[in-house]
Length: 157
Image 1: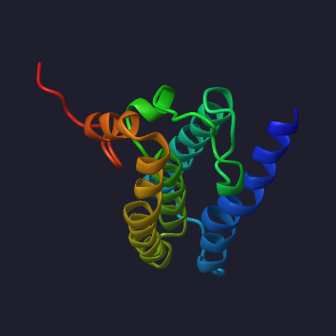
Image 2 (image 1 turned 180 degrees about the vertical axis):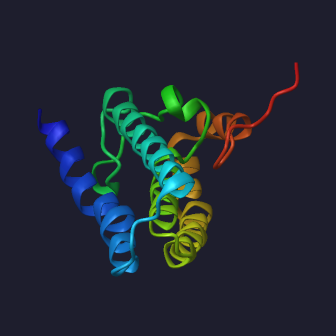
């Protein structure tokens, strides 16, 4: 129960702020798009939320931790959604922000998503990956060789 509360608090503050509050405010007083744009927005929201929920589940159940750096998983999480992407939490938030862009039919949240992607890429490359390599050694290096940073790698048969 304590782990669930920590994950819920983190989710409310970080993804709630980054992927919900800021893009909503960037949309301003825009009218919600209709038709195909609305359908796209719903799909992006649903996919982003589903990926996020699975990723935090894997962090909690497999890694025994949360996405918060102060309570990171105790074990390297390489199963579940992490078999396909080394950074599904970031992917999920970017999908939700793209959903806001589709919902409002404006490029402002999309430009924000591009900025987030650049920021996430820098944090991953210069902080998270070196930290995980130090923390988990060869286990992380083997994982990194097999799983893409953002999207699943296509494997040859």
